[in-house]
Image (tube, rainbow, N blue to C red; front, side):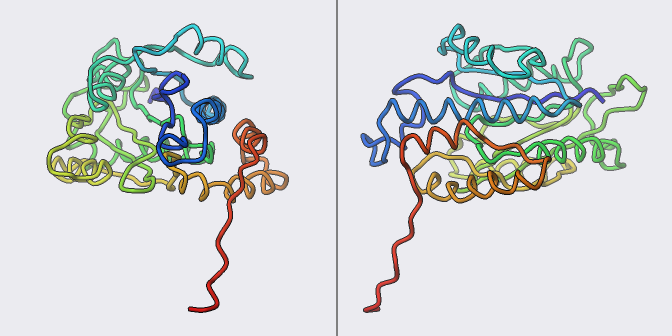
Amino acid sequence: MKKAILVFTKVPKVGDCKTRLTEARGGILTYEEATEFYEACLLDVIDVCLTVEEADFWICYNQEGDRNYLNTLIAHLKHSKRIAGVFPDQGGSFDECMQYAMDYILKSGAEDRLADALLISGGDLPTLQPYVLKDALKKLEYLNQTEAGQKVAFNKVQANDGTAIGSALVEGACQEGGFSLVGLTCTTDFNFYSVFYNMEGVTALDMLATKAIKEEIPLAYVEEVPDIDIPVDLASQLPMLRIIEHAAKYDSSLTVPRRTIDILNKMGIESVALPPDKGN
């Protein structure tokens, strides 16, 4: 089964990235620092994705983003030649843009599809590790061949090895009811409409589960990978980044998000816990 990984991202731009981390919105960073931070995260995430050789790698960026600047950023990556393609999203809402990205690769199983299975990641997951991506792809490979996966496949499509591609979903959670990773096969009856924006106030993670349950789609779960949107997210991940940096000295399977760590060190940002109030 031909597999692909896609990072769905904005092109870093001052005033347009991670604004909830900025002083203007109650955070701790300037607009320029927030952009530097996101750029470091994005490049670290792309680096991790490019280490997974069993999948092609794609980037989908915001339609208004500066493609030339994005090209400049990725040109200096160690494995940039492994990037299969870069394309802008289309649509208005986040749901529509995610759907476009999925359709661009999977094409509902049509013969001109670019992959049989797709795994989508955000660009703000600095603790993401290769083993999480490999685990997600492995679970898609397994579930699509189960009896349940074959039963609910909406289209009769074969992989290069002649096996029928069944239905399968995989997700990795992040905090506050969101998800960091989502993957599916080209014969899975799933769309992103109303996942991120719905009138019922259902979280994205719960809406994904609701759709999977309704259509009886086999669903796999992988390790949670937190994203960084607000200052408390950043504070929570600073110790995780230190642990990864140290643990990688003894575990070659780990990838150190060096750019993210370096930019946070440059900014002098530390995570602290207030001492307990002895009067209470």
